Length: 192
Image 1: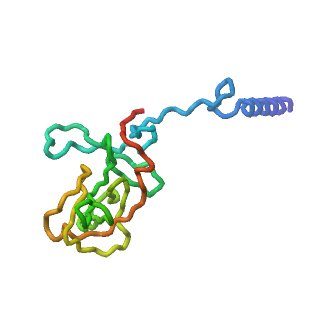
Image 2: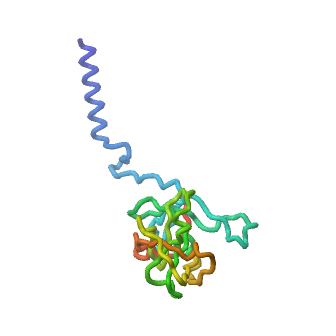
Image 3: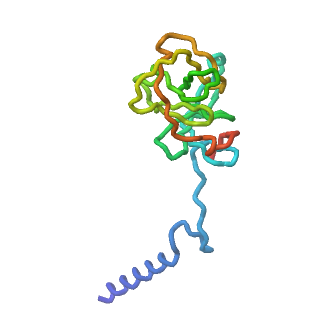
């Protein structure tokens, strides 16, 4: 009997000590211990706002393909939207598809090429970035013929689009986020 009583008193004392000590992240002085730094590479903007975690890199441009070194970070974008993967350079956020327009200033309603939308082997959602806005193909959008298409290149310049009739058929692009209000260039890679 006496042994059971000592065990209960000992257990109550141990629980009391644990309650007084707090959680395991409490320092001796009672101040919280900060969590460890993130261990994943990420891209941040000029204000140290996390643009996203790095999930990969792109190679250099095709004209420089024989120099195998990272060119752009591929990040899982840190916005309140479905999971989206974009490319980030030091000055821009890029989608994985170019946007089409009906005018030479690449303003107004953007479109995705029908070919890009209907390509069956995509792992990531199709996204485009134009004038600081992130776009996705409009769900259920019918294809639209664009008589004189212009495309917004990844460099940010607007250029006439030459090519087959398939290239000039588009699907309406819907805006989902104004990235220019969320992130401020320049962007930089940080680890950890």
